[in-house]
Image 1: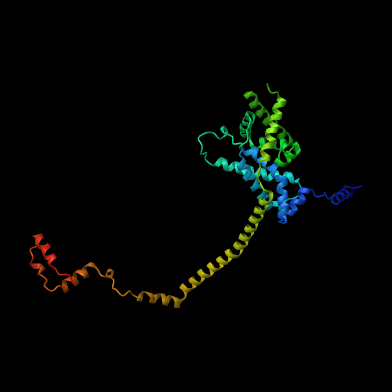
Image 2: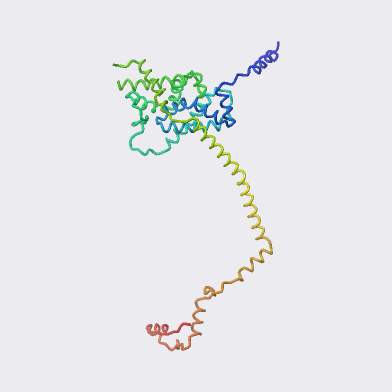
Length: 194
Length: 137
């Protein structure tokens, strides 16, 4: 049997196995068509994970809310261009990360108005934050963006290393190292305090 | 109580998950969806408006300039333009006269003009008086 003959049945099998659309993908299709109710349902499902990601990346409730809203604006515009090569969640967090990187760049370009260094006063909203949370906020802010994002996706979204690597376009080994380093630096700061 | 590494991990995880803060999130799904939808429609309208009116404005501009250009090149139009300087304002302009002409006309029009040559020019005071005595038209 030649190589060509062997490869043909395999090709046919791939064609026959069309993966069923998951719920998020179905919703995205409706959003792309301009269905307002589908968009509201989509926002309902994704607003909390996205907000949590932004909140632990920029440490300000109001800014995280603004970014979350901007994120859904962007999703509405880009919904039609979604290709089901990757999972919907991967696509969503790629957009969220791009938005975050843009925001961080904008902030780095702006001159600081306050005389105090920004990390001295983490703005964590009105809640009664414990001493640990304060230290963690300061340390998390000091981390490089890719370390922090990898850690957040691992802990908040409970993604596998492989999924994170796929989303961030790096190797799994890189992701593992980043998360390890991020955890170590957070723990060290906590140990110093205790 | 001294915290063990395991407890540190738990603390880190609960901080990163920020469940309490997530619950305080105030984003109304329906309202945001409505705003986004409205924004998209406005954007669509703006795009349509721009797609229609910008080329039209460009066409008008091209027409206008090509017309004004051909008008200037046209010999008849050039003749019309050549007549334009003939139309003068009602009051005569003094800018066309030189300073000497004005002086001469003053001298000519003054009736009792003293003999300038008879004046002793060594005495500048007299010269001044002579000049002052000139009657202006």
